[in-house]
Every structure is written in C-alpha cells, then in structure tokens.
Image 1 (tube, rainbow, N blue to C red):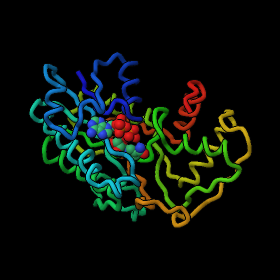
Image 2 (image 1 turned 180 degrees about the vertical axis):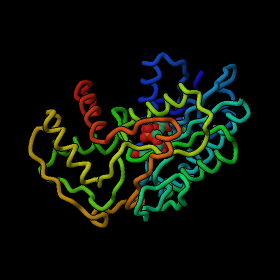
Image 3 (image 1 turned 60 degrees about the vertical axis):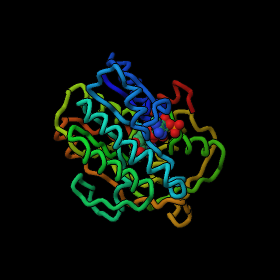
Image 4 (image 1 turned 30 degrees about the vertical axis):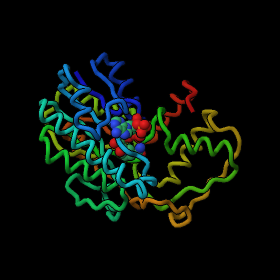
Length: 291
Ligand SMILES: NC(=O)c1ccc[n+]([C@@H]2O[C@H](COP(=O)([O-])OP(=O)(O)OC[C@H]3O[C@@H](n4cnc5c(N)ncnc54)[C@H](OP(=O)(O)O)[C@@H]3O)[C@@H](O)[C@H]2O)c1
C-alpha cells in the first residue's frame, strides 16, 4: 500500500490519476493530515501498513516564502523530517520531491547530483533543509529534484501564459534564465515506475524533461502550439525581457539545467523531450477544457 501525501496539489493529483489508472492501491491525504505535526502523521496512518510514502506536499509560493519564512521552513524542512521519521519508525520507503532552486545557477554544464548546492532563495534553502533532514533521518529515500513543473491541476507558467496570450496583444517574458520544463505527467510516470520496480537504489536523482530553454523560448513554443491547437485565438507579440526588467521577491537561478544521466542509468527511464510533453499537456488541456 502507498501513502500519497499532498494528493490535492498539481503533482499529487497527476500521480493519483496515474496510480488509479494502473490499479495501484494507495491512500491520498493533503491538508487534513498536517505534515508539520508528527503526531498528526502517526494518528493519520494508524492501523495501516504503508510500504511506500510519496511526499508531494510542499510550500511552493516561491516569492511569498521570502517574507513567510517560518511557514515555508515548517512545511518544506520540518514536514519532510517528520515524514522521514514516520518512514523510519514504520520501515517504509520514501519518495520526496525537491527542486533545481537548491543551486545558485552559476554552472555552465548540467548540474549533477554531486554538485555543490547553494540556494539563493528562502524557498530553495527550505527545500534543501528538507533534503538534509530526510538524509539524516532515513536511508530508504529517493529525493527527486525537478524543475519548471507544469500540469493540468495547478497554477503554472503554461496556464498563465495561455491566459495572458488571450488577453494581451504584447507580452514580455524573461529571456536570461535557462532551465528545463517538466510536465507533471512525466514525473508521475517516473515515480510510478520506481514504486512498480520496488527499487532499493536509494539516493538523490535529477529529473526534468530533456532540452534547455529560457522562459521566453518556452513561451514562444507555447504560443506556437496553442495557436495551432486553437487554445489562443488572437494575435500576441512576445517580447524578450531581462531579469532586471521583471523584478520578483525571490531570486531565481540564471541557469538550472540538470543532468539526467543518473536517473536514466539507474532506472532505465527514457527522458521525454520537452516539446513532445508540452504537446501532450496542451492536447489534454484542449480535451478537458481545464484552463
Ligand atoms: N511547481 C514547480 O514549478 C516545482 C518546481 C520544482 C520542484 N517542485 C516541487 O514539486 C513538488 C510538487 O509541487 P506542486 O507544484 O505539485 O505543489 P502544489 O501544487 O503547491 O501542491 C502542494 C500540496 O501540498 C499541500 N500542503 C501544503 N502544506 C501542507 C501541510 N502542512 N500538510 C499537508 N499538505 C500540505 C498543499 O495544500 P495547499 O494548496 O492548501 O497549500 C498542496 O495541496 C513540491 O515538492 C515542489 O517543491 C515544484
């Protein structure tokens, strides 16, 4: 049996869908079992035997975290520590999701799992603290760092772009931050595969879709395909911006491409191309009319 924590979030809902389709037994919880309260985890899981725990719960408001440090730390650092403790006491394997924001973005070649971390935002620091707490608490963990996540169930860059492209005739998008988009469906597939294989190759892994783009490049492809599919009606001109032209509370890494060699080598998981995955997402959006 699997315990999916954070089942109401963007990734959590995508993963729940995947587990349902594959007929995998799981129990999903979200806010009703507060991960920042160890007792709540104990009470919530009482009477059940979970072999796997997947933590998709997090504080993900990157800019708000700069001024809401206490809560971000509780959810992103203390929460994972509590979950790891529960897994340790109950001998369950833990899959936890982390972020490319643990890096400072100064690299010039894809970040490997062994590269030094140096977060530049409160969100990145609290996510890193969560990783460290898990490693200190429980050996049987898989920490999956991902980047630029989007999916049909939550607020994200692709949805925001399509909404704005339908409202504006001109749109500025940052063109000096480079990374790799990740469709939540691809990450859900990887997680489901790790569980299905009952893997014991514990550790930290990087996963995103393949390719490296700026937010502006990403927006150009969204516009192209969304117009072809009829998700954007009128004309919208995209304008490349510099980071300093679009100030945000939290600093983002300028370059956060991660190497996927380890995840491919260890799990034999083929890394999907970001444009192909964007297409799947857009067609899914079109079919479900979720925007
Ligand atoms: N989104 C991205 O671009 C991105 C990029 C890299 C990595 N990640 C990581 O990927 C994972 C999934 O992200 P996501 O975008 O799917 O997140 P999300 O949509 O924000 O979902 C997180 C879920 O956790 C719940 N939650 C928050 N605090 C909780 C608590 N104390 N106890 C129980 N549940 C709680 C949230 O409830 P509320 O909605 O009520 O707060 C929400 O349902 C996270 O670990 C995130 O850090 C995300």
